[in-house]
Image 1: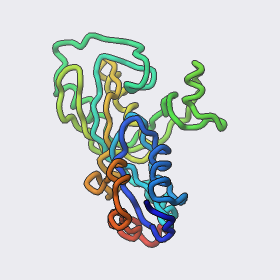
Image 2: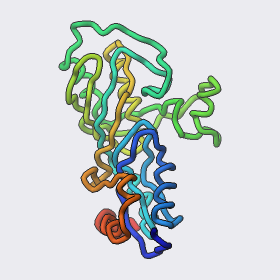
Image 3: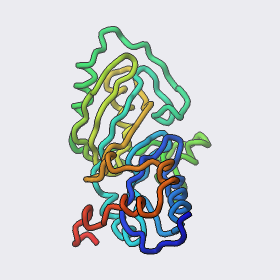
Length: 242
């Protein structure tokens, strides 16, 4: 068991399991490392897996810089179904039969048209707050309120595979981008609707999935192995950002 070790400082990249909130992962890490000074740099929805950047000790000072980094994801959208949350955690609101003529080329073209600078309206089922209340709480009551669109940038948005009704993709995007909203918008552009069924963050800035450790492995790690996993802040953050 690890006793309190305030000297543990650095960036810990965790491979978040599905079904966990980002807060759940932080709570687990606090328990395993026996330290309260842990935060994260970029929320993942419970459905999503992959890179969750944890900041341990003095590394918490780098939070704003690391949160601002671009992200990369791989995911899968299901065409022909729309849900109220834009992902598979929600209720199916509409179903459309996919035309036999719909092919990979048309889907890839719809994705490519979404690359570049744009404004995106946060979904109602999100943690974004309006007058101090998370939108998802309002959505669960059946309320819908105006949301201010946010400026985002979508880098490369490419199709990896299409086996009807599922299309897998890779996307790079700026912070604050809702990938499930991108999936929803692709479905709208194709006239069939879509929702996100799987999402994996593969990178956050220069920190990527190859550096990640699972919570299960973290539980079993001796202190020296955990320390070896910590990325020094100076490797990921320029000195002027601290």
